[in-house]
Image: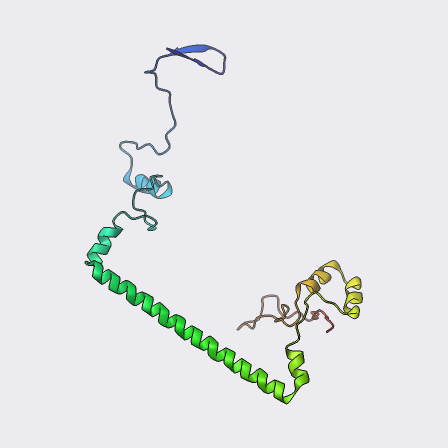
Length: 186
């Protein structure tokens, strides 16, 4: 016999055959309405992970389904090799297109170097995105904090963030007549 300490400090002798009431939310009740049972099963699925799921995360019958669809190992290997060959062809096409674009860019840069060396040097000059001119440093001191952050976030030479995406219809708020782009000296 074992004793249990209850909240009111009374010791109760309990035999090993005494069952305590446990709440079982997923307990199957006999005589339940089938509609309620269906709703309950859809809202509270079982936690057992070794059953097939409707989303297809785990299916024990996958091997049987594959055997039904592709009866032989040779056919499966042939399909697998064909898929890898298809992916290799796509990869080779992409690499050839990239190589063609790079060669075209190289020819254009060689042509620019032969025409005007100053423009060629300006086009290939490395730029430090954090470097600021004295004029820009003085301007940043006079700006509000939000505008200064916008200036820091914008990297020169990239597509401007302020530019709106063209749409088929105007915005619901209409045109912003007082909007001005942020001035950034070069």
